[in-house]
Image (cartoon, rainbow, N blue to C red):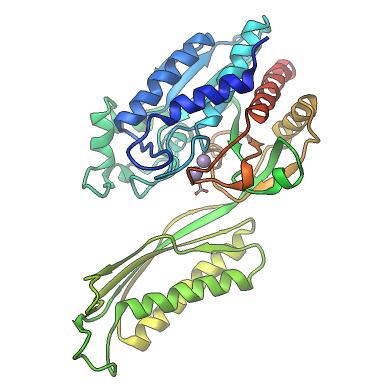
Length: 407
Ligand code: HGY
Ligand code: MN
Ligand code: MN
């Protein structure tokens, strides 16, 4: 009798080794670490009887043919991690469905529909200032301009993909025929505390939060910290500090709104010079799009006021947004039944993190299975999901696949 949880834990441990230097896991897209992960996943997919291809967006596709005309159920998640992240975010959602298919194969259970397991190259958007390239390619919503975006080293997304052996300018041809796709089910650690608090191993997602990101650049005047009078200073960092405080204030004052200033850079960034430039990012998330948009508009008005008061130049741009994404009622019901079959209550909860499923929703119905993670911790080396919970998720995914007999 295979211990699927132990198997999953061992595989995720091996995959975690494919990382850049430093604590935790740093596996960015189109890197040697990415290639090593794809090699292991390809072998695992072949062992489960899947036909393996790599598409021009860098998505590894493992396909199991079902009965002609029955459509394709897609499963999967992202292979990339944040810097110094954990061993479960993303990659767990690639390994577990493969093991579910291997389990059904071992039990001689045929899945009537075709199934594809997808390992998307880049969901986090850490290396390049864009995200969800692989899932958007399948949905046909990729803006080709993103291929010109560059990483911190000046490598464009296009060149990174070409260097990985891909033909990125053919990314537009990856769009799938929506008639053929039954839906997309993403399995992911919860990255929050609810399942642990409810002592539930698994949960089913009701909706994925809406999210928007802003880029703010303030330009003032550099000066000697000792000789430039306080009167009349045009200190860019003082402007940034006022904006950061306001972002935090509105999020604390607004129900169902989370806001984060995650990145800040100043110039010249030395102890004895008044900063001439400050660049920061601000991110808003909510399960209500109106709440999020109002906060973003307020940010721009507030930044304008601060820049005028201090005499700073201001460049402020909403660089990214995606709406709240409700999950498919039919797939949600199948997942709830499968979780119950695997011994759970079938808890339903919203996702405060965004996922590839948000992008796949432009192609097909989507649903998500959450796996409990210790202390709700994620995007940190301490991220952890117990083998027992991994095993229950494999069982639930196998049950969903079996339920597709009546798709
Ligand atoms: O940002 C997120 O929510 C996801 O982890 N990329
Ligand atoms: Mn993540
Ligand atoms: Mn993720």
